Length: 275
Image 1 (cartoon, rainbow, N blue to C red):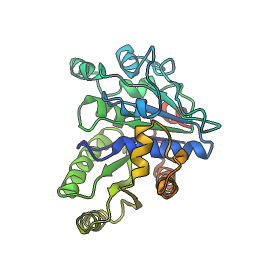
Image 2: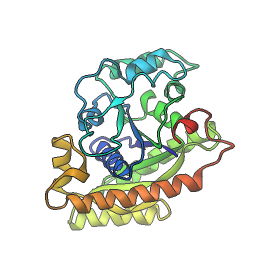
Image 3: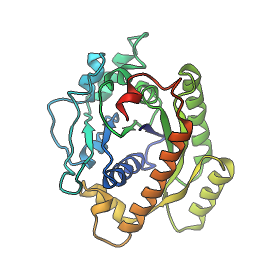
């Protein structure tokens, strides 16, 4: 029902943490989830406990054909935690070498991922984009119907969000209004005066788009990442609260996606694949 790009042009904001948190709570609801790892760091891939795989997203992008991702998607290592564990289109560090090659294709460089998603059968497709606006991220935004921007409550956060929203608008102008902005989620909100101040600045600047609650800074989230397990399965203080926050963020995103859906403009193939 939703294809979602998780984006920010700045690294270190916990973008992949948000992507995996959403995948965990969506899987707990028995939704069929596919995580597409577009980041050459492959943190979403290892976070889903996938260590080796014969094929990766790089193979699908190189193929440049409809449905190329179908043979890449594999089961994650979260099968012990869910009846319907998320699947993953794994990444590889070699993906970084592919990006400059995409620039040599002036016609098809932007929509290779969109084409490759044709035939993917899932309720939710989560695309974890790199922390930059290169051609990999542009592919993610051309493939998604909706985008969520991840921000950290720190200095320059407002300016960083503004920059990526301008780029989202530029892409939407070229795609008939897609992707729509599903919201801005604040991640790693610490219990400090400085963090609260910058969180308030983001809310004041983007009152219609700021998603509440923010995702609090918790050791349980870091433990989930370190152990390559879903936050819903972590047995330590703060894990249940963190999972509840991700649940509420997912509720917001599903509502925003439903309200922003337009069958006349949603890309053919990818929308069908995400239902």
